[in-house]
Image 1 (cartoon, helix red, strand yellow):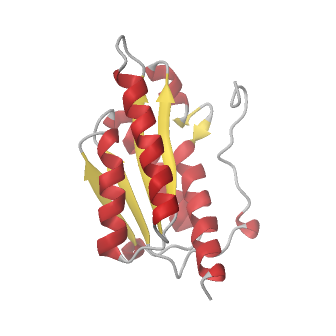
Image 2 (cartoon, rainbow, N blue to C red):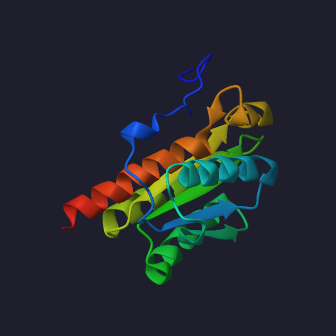
Length: 164
């Protein structure tokens, strides 16, 4: 397990570009909201900590993880954002639903990254049980939302520096 006994959410602000001049979109799944709210809190806190202005963080909710792709696409088209973070949580159940949703969202986010000029950050927990998701949304393994925010800042900066 890659995150066993390790909190990957610690970051050094001195190594991260200042986020003051960037606009961030965050699309959050309402499904498994106990988890996704924790991920959102981690992402928002990290963005603000790194200089993002509250008015430059736009949040949209979508019903489930499968809808993250459409929400991110609409965010890119309508909100003039520098980066979009997609936040969701799919917990394995007894049917193939888990595999279909995870594959669809993964491919959809990949497609947006290839087809648009705005980076889309993948913050979709795909865990075997709820405890694993809790551990990764502010628990013993840190907060993947925090990690997604740091990735978003770095990718927004990459976009800016390569579009000049």
